[in-house]
Length: 341
Ligand SMILES: [Zn+2]
Image (cartoon, rainbow, N blue to C red; front, side, top):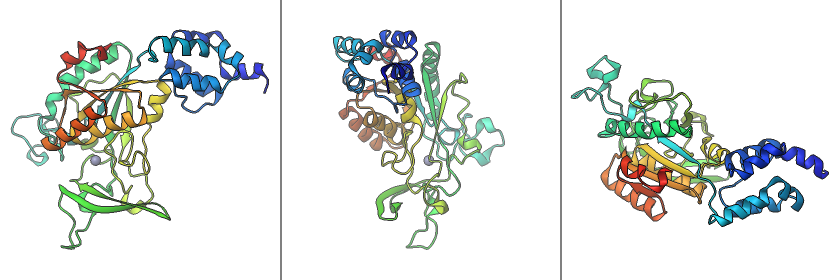
């Protein structure tokens, strides 16, 4: 391929260079993907841009401004412009308490606004005013907001009723932990693990799977569905549950959402993670974010999440801090921090 063709493929000249010069990494990544066929080019630090530049002829890289970009990034300590996104994990009716005091169970009322979810997290409704402040701020800045949803088929692996207890010959009770299961990755590979079994929750298309009306919406949030049961064992949905919004516990070996792809395409390098619940889906999503994107700032806010189990939440937060994730107590603290810029 001659250089002119390569130039045409890479970008339409001035606009591309403008994106590079304004350090708009999301736009650069998008153009490289669309026009050069590069898959999810990593542009979150100087080394990654440097590596990309190395793949191109020197004069092409220079004319595209990539060389300039590397120098710029290195001058700023290797950090590009911050691209923040808000990740609201599983803010769904089935994880929320009843909205009328004293009403705890769905069968106690016919008023949908009062219903409690089948897997309601204690004090869950109190997170929404705080998350809504973040939502307002991200909406005002036109920043990406992701909302994940557990989205299970009736035969999902996490439902206790889908597993027979070999000792009793009857289905397991919900809230049975450490049940040994295995999943076939292919004809030669079986992976064994312990699973927690839950009541039926977040069934696709039902009220329980819907997003709580307490959460503000702007109509532009990106939806991430997980635990959808697209797997290799049709009689039991997928055989590994997905707590993380990125995919299953083996980092997407069996089932992967679009989240990793969307973050890479948009050049997002700071993720504020909130929702339900700290010790399960919020914690797993935050930890996966750091695994998939080691250079990403991952930030959590106590006010904007609630847990199932206090010990589990403490352990998860200790792991998160050890991995370099930052946890603020309140939205006010976060708003006053460098992470809010
Ligand atoms: Zn679930």
